[in-house]
Amino acid sequence: MAQHIFVDRERELQFLMDRYHSSVPECLILYGRRRVGKTALLSRFLQAVPGFYFLASEEGTASNIRDFSHYAGEYLDDPDFERISYPDWQAVITALIRHRNFSPPSGGKVVIVIDEFPYLIARDRATPSLFQKVWDMVLSREQVMLIISGSSVSTMETDVLGCRSPLYGRRTGQWQLEPLPYPYLREFLPYDEEDLVMAWCMLGGIPAYLQMFRPDRSLWENVEDQILRKGAYLYSEAELLMQYEFREAGNYMAILRALAAGYTTQSSLCQVTGLDKGMVSKYLAVLSRMHLIKDEVPVTAHAGYRRRHYRLTDPYLTSWFRFVYPRRAETETGKSREVLSSIRDEIAPYCREMFELLCEDLVRRGILFPEASGSRLGRWWQKEVEIDLVGLDETSGSALFCECKWSTLTHRQARGILTALREKAAGVRWQNEDRNERYALVAKNIEGKEDLIREGYLVCDLQDIARLSGKYLAERKG
Image (tube, rainbow, N blue to C red; front, side, top):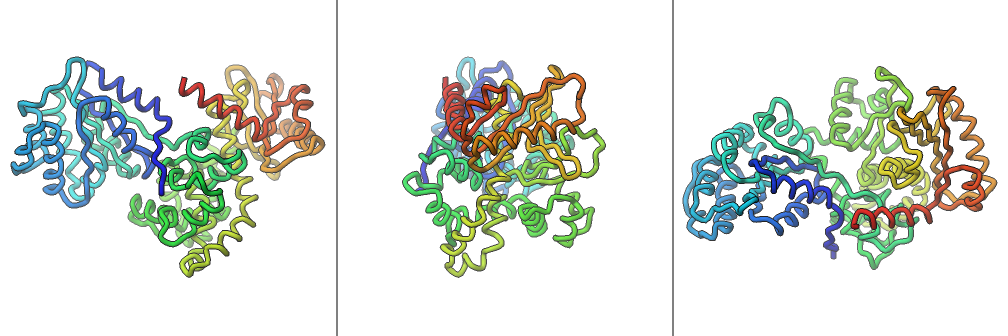
């Protein structure tokens, strides 16, 4: 049975509460991918303020207006409210505002949440225009807080937030809900740090996915039961996400599978998928806008640099397209144990790749090496030479060079990596004559790391990540 945990989201709750106490009516847009925690956040917010929550469906405008009037009637404590037939959204919302029991509290507002707004748009493309009219003629004149929420990132960013959307000039604020940072995984799972990192590599920070893993089961038991078993939630979630977001889901899945397999350039993606360059370019732009992939250039590259690499950044989708999707035939025929065995054989190189992304995120958040993080952060490469992570600070002139290794290192191995890193850093053309260089190494375990730290290196292993993650959580909760 899935856990039910609400963690983090202090900033998001504070954002909503600040807007609730503002002196003007608010029209907020809240969005984020499926299962990232929007409904849980809105439910928690509505525990503290007056208002009601409505979840749109795919049943059409008339049915949605009836359902909306039901929840509005519950809020108004008037069972007769939903018995009236309202012809359109303006009529039902006007009736709500004018009802005798509609009374915003002093210094506050009545909160109206409309979740999964893209369902309304899918059944009636005029929905954004209709709600623009509702806002202009009704809600903008009242002490209300309208929250329009949705899981289809592409629809929300185009039809709600896009500059051509009728609602573009009406919103008073917006927030894209992101996955939880890595330190919060320990709120869900009682694993040691190595297994916790591997759980992140498989699931990322999506709360609903993490809640599927039972804390009384080992990492690999959970992988087999929750990801590799036909009928399990996480076995089909990736495909459902693709179908929910994209009309041409098959083409997007072909590109994501190729990315997960290591095809990172546009030309190689065209070759392996059989799609033409224009189509691949369009699909990559959409995936990038949804924050499922990122296009990479060397961190020192100029704005017009063309030889871009593309990388899947969502851990769950990366692991699913790498391990589950290509082996569905075996899983469908009940061979999940054999699939699990093959994944365990191949997990080390996969974790090496994902560990780099995790370390970059930890540095970006100031959890790792806050004294050396920069305004520009990313990989650097030139021909056959590559550095996992380079941070450049334009203001101070400092440069961080970091290698990330998903392995246990002896003192001699660690020193060799740091020595080679110094040599590679000399090839990074950025303020070479006047920069403050710091060299860093992150690995599973590093023997003799104290000696390296005394020599001025920044050295961190999983034990340190656990300690720094605990500190991060304590600061956020304090």
